[in-house]
Length: 334
Image (cartoon, rainbow, N blue to C red):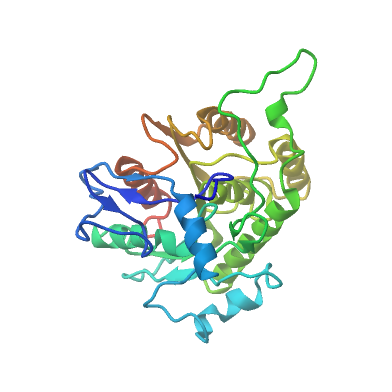
């Protein structure tokens, strides 16, 4: 097995049965679905080692078999405007809303390290199968291939200590250090996601009807989009699942710069979620960034810690997210 180098991807595991999100795993019962109304417990457990081996063996990550993105004009804007056009990157997967609304809404959801956009298509299908969020358009972008970690990554990952690092008297908290954060890679990813938001706005979706979110590394980039990008405070909301806030020692200063430029008023909602048994991104990092965001925003945010959940997603979390999205970007647009 290739060792895991940071927070990342996902698979669905049901009661006694195994089910992957997407097409890359095995399933013992293809009829399994997340029962959002009943809140049946399914977990999304990290298995990036398998993803790394597969990606290396194939030399690439395949898109959905039923979607031909090459030569499809729908993908052209995303390919032409891609911030990573000099790197190896696949265009996003776009899943149109099955029930188009007079008040369009979009969610841009980012995968984690070692995963790809295809890894989250089944989750969207399960929302639709449960007749949830039929008015919502999903954009699932792909991170570029990173040759250093031999996987798709939004930025170079950093290791996390399973126990808090000691703090010496008179010295800054070592966990506030941004020295090992790939700031350049992160801000490139932030700009790429902002470019996707630009395209949605140009296409007629009001910015206040657009949500940006992600899992693990995707969560980290989504938080930065909501806090320090040109869309700070303007989106409908930000979703952060099983991630952390990078560059935390610099975010406050970057936010002040945005506020001085007249970009400080925030209308955004936040949905932050984490597992109490996450061994890849420790719980303390979730508590830390939740408190920071509440301090910066000057209000309580919707933050949930799921007891017993690891670096994963469970059915009750998905149900909570669904309810939050129905409230933040309702079908009638009110």
